[in-house]
Image (cartoon, rainbow, N blue to C red; front, side, top):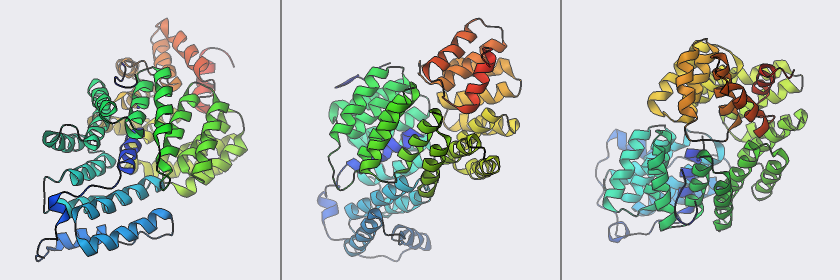
Length: 442
């Protein structure tokens, strides 16, 4: 599968947020440019929403100052575009901190507009972003379609639609929506989606070209983060294909423009660990943890600490991952538990529940690997086959499919495990040890 147009995809939400960051200020129409309507007696719920939208963000980062300025503007004007700008600023803070709680503030901003104008497209786009963050993918899709029914070329709605379809496992439709974005407005958000979807479909060359175009199209000096994320996305392609030094260069470039940027620090940590530099990995991942609530960071930091001989500290990271992750990122917890062979019934339960919400290839793989580790090989094989349907060049997917096939006596299994190690010889510490043992290389 290829993304057509000017070029040939927990990434989805980041891509959605890139669109909000690059959209520019909303343009006022005749309705929003007028004076606010006469004040009415607000309900307790409305008062609570207003308080949430206009809360002080805390901190002194650039985004915090931005939020405060937009809060002042929204309180003064009460115009729709000011509430949307405030909501986008809250989303930027959520993106930069990986703290999902800030999406509630953004949703309150959307509701402040939609309570008076239920068809306001920019507020609906903002609502869609919050629905994606809450993993309400069917709702996000419905919201996007609602906007597109009013205006078929609404770029933000197309982005939300593509992201929702991707998480729902409807890949052809996700690609079609992303292609429409590229055709309508070649830009960082559309190129970033094209890059991820091309990589997911096994087209590494197209993915890298789209990533290059995404980086080159970033042109907002006041908000470098979208460009930094695009650089991280490009570096991840090199990481997946086993070019760990090349990936590290990309992450370093992102950190040059966005110092202490958690996604880039996470990438540097993974690259360092793959290169056998466990102590450096601990340094990078510890720094990433300070600035982000990402569940994956806890996993990778635990692995780096374990590789450094710090097993007690590693276990502390794993315990925190499980405790927080069940609510914040259950699929990653399922993947972690299956990888480590821990509490497999919980892993199966979490992945099964995720299949109802986001039945894509990575959820299928998480459930397949959980079932396999629990001895339910035949069930696992069905899901492993489905997770391979796009031809994604991910060593973990290849290894899982190969190990399951080998257990069933399928001659193709050994070849898949070999391909995994050829593609990325250090894709995951636990997985690599198991793969090498399966091939008799220990």
